Image (cartoon, rainbow, N blue to C red):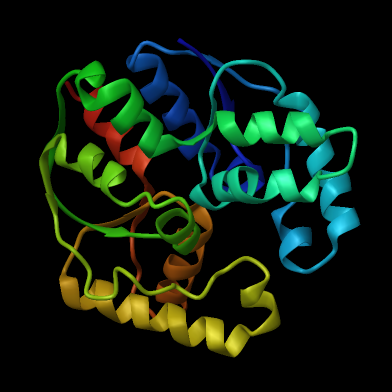
Length: 245
């Protein structure tokens, strides 16, 4: 199956290793992976700030680059939700309207695509070289808007040598929220600290998530407080387990 991998801007700029891991996992599952350099930002920052025209201008480049017929696999639940839920509204009444609706139907969040459409069996055996205890953080957009929470857990359950320990605050926001953390930094930091305390109390080795903005925020707060937390995109820990088989 041919897929178009959409890294999204934050992973591409700050966590390219996660994008590379996603590419390797998809290839391992039998996909032919294609990138489009022109696909940069989905326009979510502008949209969330109420700057509709600016969001449309930014997102139109990605929309044009992502045209086609195959699945668009995104490394971000947040950006997947922007495309799936809001691109039809963002481009309504414009010449890009039909293309936006088409992209909304084709976009897939990485873990849901691998677990539910390709199937974990397509990956083959996966195991870590050592026993690892992991916690999983559910990002708000992915869990509440796309309704995806089981898929990443299916992928983690597929990894031999990994124990998943559920966090007490699994249904609570970490406080990043894109522009929310910029507008309300004190509130955002307090919410992030709640997650850090939960991670520390859970005694886990690695915090896994499907949205790297959340990991950046939680791990950043942990580092600032002298409680370093290892963060991993779900593709990275899965890729690590596949490499050892």
